[in-house]
Length: 486
Image 1 (cartoon, rainbow, N blue to C red):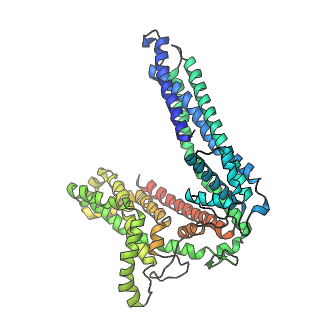
Image 2: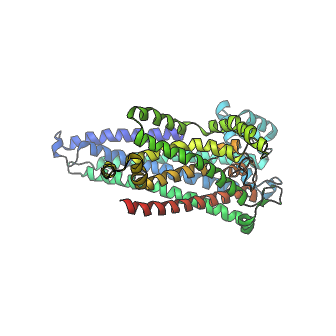
Image 3: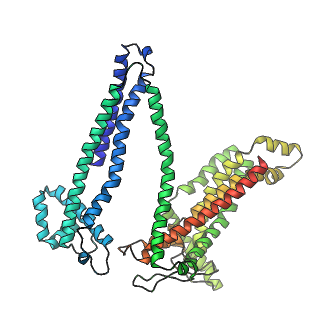
């Protein structure tokens, strides 16, 4: 049974439980709902919650634990001699999972029995061809041990899904029967339902917190693993980025960090003035008719895919800067440059600054404007000396959001700034950023245990620390000025 079908059955049982709860509550009240402590709908909700929530928790926990248990069991079937030279157990296990998925596809399409699947091990070359036809790409030839491990992986996975389906349905039925049997006229179903919903809200709020801790933990663990293989001193203080997967790599972060800051600075240098001035115009000077047209038009920029911005940088902005600035001034010959990526990224960031700043400026109380006008200030003086200082905390937040968006951008940098890791002040030279190198180091069938791959997590950790520092500084500025104007 597929997970989708299982979830549909659980939700169907919950819906049935809701109807049963309402009818049973009315029966217990003798048809007079005034005798019920809680409305009949609350009785239905209590049955629905006791039916669905425990079963869904079982499904979630099972799906988290099953892959760990199966991989621990199957990986023990792969001997060290079965790992190809220059490869790793992680890559072999990836092949095991792919072969298992391919066997499932072949068995479903050709209606094969387990004995017929086991017979495929006699012709591993033919098996790889059939897997290729099924859309399964492998890192190496299928070895007998990999085939047997794949069969075991497939069988355990299918058995686990069957056991999960039976267990989850039984838990849902048990919850339905238990909650329905508790329904009486005096049963406080509203209290039970509201307590359940409160716990659901608390759990939902913890999802974001736990996700944050999970992200940090994964970065820290893999970063520590990287620094066990590569000296932290060379990573933090080297000025060269030159990964060589065959050894002799220089993995200094400074060229990447410089490129990230440089591109982001150019983008903000363009986006902040344009976005802030457009926000002031829309909120203070534009008529309602103009505002109703211009603001949606600006916000359309936020909905354009970054790949489109990247193509715009590659085809239009890059050649223009090269032909009219870089080559005539003798500053470069490539259409990929920091200025290309920064300008296009700045265009993308305009709605982040403009729309948020516009909302923040409109939130400044009208009484502050009226008081300024009453003291004889002009409109421009009111904007400059009253409205902007009062809205400054929110504007700083908008700029911070734009900066975070710029630091995390990848596609525009790939197509506009290139992939050269270097330290240079020339904005018309090609450079790259941390996010681009994170993607490039994790792309392809590379050995996951190598420093050249694990460096992506160290780069991510450094980027996280850097953005966290920016947040702390922004919070300090916001609190300082908020105390002054509130």
